[in-house]
Amino acid sequence: MTNGIDKKALFNLKSEPYLKPISDLGVGFYNLDENTAILRFQLSNERGPLLISENNLTAYAYFESSNGSASDVIELEVEDSHKGIVTVTLDKEFLQASTSTKVIGQVYIAVNNVDGKPEYNEVAVFREFTFEVADALINKISSFTKVEYIRMFSQLKMKIEEQVRAIEEAIANGADYVAEMKSVLQQGVETLNAIVADGTADIQTFITQAKTDLTKVKDDATSDITTTANNAKSTVQETSTNAINSIEATALEATEHVDGKVAEFNETVEANGFLTPEKLTEDITALNWQKFKMTNDDGTYQTLSLLSNVDTLHNLVPGNYYFTGTPITGSSSTAGFAKVEQREGTVRHITFRPYNSNQIWIKRFYNEWTEWERVGVSQNDTGWIPFQLANGATSNTEYTDKSGFTCAFRTVVNGSVTTNYLRLNGKKMTNGQTIAQLPSSMVKNAQSFPVRTPTNKPLAYITIYVDGTVSLLINKTSSTGTWEETDYIYGEFSWTI
Image 1 (cartoon, rainbow, N blue to C red):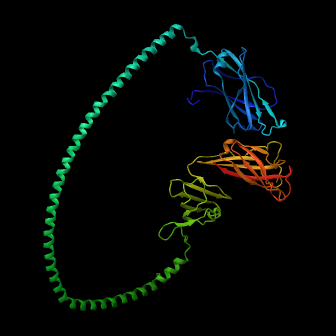
Image 2: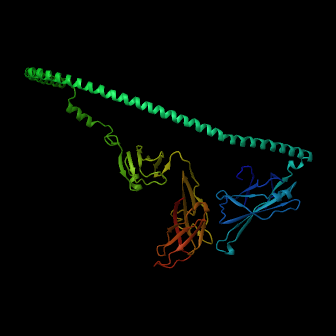
């Protein structure tokens, strides 16, 4: 129920051929429950919960009270197809008719025969169970108390009506408040306009005076600079000749002094075992230090176009990169910053950060590469769920001596991306036959894939429809041999929703 007050009772029912006593789990409802008395059943067999769907089977329930009252045959709703959970809501009229009694119920399931062949009909009856229907306590309230409640609600109604009238009067008075606010606003606008006009006049006067003062300062400065420049020019011309001669003599003396000191230093270095520049370069080159280049010389990342090639991605050497055309699904962009890391040995990590979001994705290698995983986003994997082919087809007949896989399906949720997988292995099937039934939640759009067949037989395809049915389609235009029921199919397929 959307209001959240439903009362659910869970029964675990197992499909088995043993007669057992009627189960009483102490469940009870009241005759005033309406759309809240819900029974949930988890259907299972010795292998675990049954995989059920509204497309491949129908579930029913029937209830009978100890006073002779009986319900209609009620069809159950599939709540969780992977866990085998179905639900039924008990009818209000049946609960009232069964007041103060014990009710016996039973659940039935029937497999839908998609090809209409009687030999494939299947019906299972589950063990009986009981629950009680009690009389609600409120039904026992006296007439006097009911009258008092009516008077109380009448007074409450009058109080609410008074509050509503007060609110309506306050809303009506709001018009006067609006008019007063408009008047204040107009006064404020007029005051601001006067302030702006006065300020503009003051600023213009200040600008005019400033221009006059600056012109005078400029003229005085120009005159002083011209006089100073003329005096300096005369002085420089008189002293330049003597200065040049003195500088040349001093430079020659300094050069001779430096050459002597360099020679003296070289002799001291060689005598005391110090490194010369040439020797220092040779020793540094011979040292065992990390020469691997992680970035460009200016610290930027190397730009690399992967062209959606996953092998190019997997074979990259450690370093920092900026990828374009990254082979990734679900990311906000295929372009972004990346870092390739490797431990001494085979363990590797590739971290990818799209340029236009705060997403972080990681790929890991240990013996084999994982798919991209988004950091900080919950993931879920159902694992491989085995099933049998339908309508007479024989399951799991091929590659049994070569570790071949068996018929199974799987759902992997990675953040907002859901990937579904299907494995098919079997034979004894014909063109157009429905060979499997998947949960309809796995298929949003119809899917079609080529499938492995014997090399001397026509091409074949499997098509998965939105109701979860899987059909085999044979290519009749092929020039190879005729398709026989003994021919096989084998393949694994995946799609995202």
